[in-house]
Length: 114
Image 1: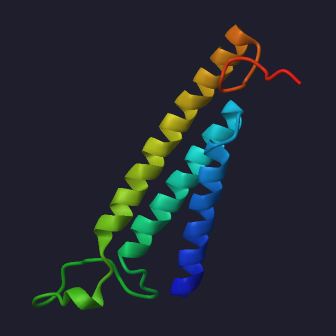
Image 2: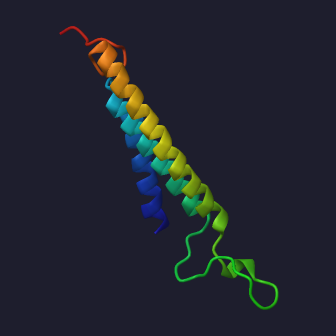
């Protein structure tokens, strides 16, 4: 299972890098989104994904930390997702405005001559 998750994170991050190097603004934005998803998945997996285990709760006696899932990575990923949506919306608005002003979505501001 660890190999599948590691490959998924690697493919997401590699695809994001490839898209960032493209000449169109929309592709660059999609690359940033894929990279942020890869980082979120990495942070989430670092908190040890447990199946059928409760989060930290108060119970009788001292809780055994091995028996519970770590809530901190989950909270960090949730915060990162919300911030990612906000920055993506900002990027899209800036992209639409720049396309309206320059007439192109090329990152250099002009189409390359053929």
